Every structure is written in structure tokens, then in C-alpha cells.
Length: 66
Image 1 (cartoon, helix red, strand yellow):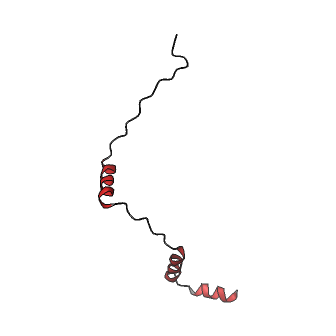
Image 2 (cartoon, rainbow, N blue to C red):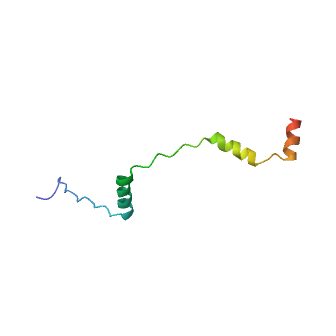
Image 3 (cartoon, rainbow, N blue to C red):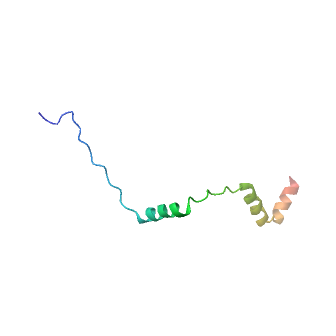
């Protein structure tokens, strides 16, 4: 008779202790969850970028031709 057809139960792998995760968990318990990140509007970023890069004389001349 053998072990045919039978499966052995495998041991559960223990997770390695992480000091960082423990500290963060304790901080969340004391202070609370951090606020979710704010979504930054891309249009405002684009306007800033255009204001920073001024139009050159060659750009102005090519626009008048079109």
C-alpha cells in the first residue's frame, strides 16, 4: 500500500516580521488613516507650461503665414 491518491497537508509559511509595517500599523491606530491624495487638474499644468515657454520670433512669423 502506498501514499497513492493521498495528499499531505502543507505547512503554512510564516511571514517575516517587518519593523516598518509594525510601526506604520501602530501609527494608523493612534493617528488614523491618512487622507486620500488630491487629483491635480492637468489643464492648469498645461497653462503654466505655456506661460513659461514664451513664443519666439520664428514661431510668430510662421503663424502669420498660415
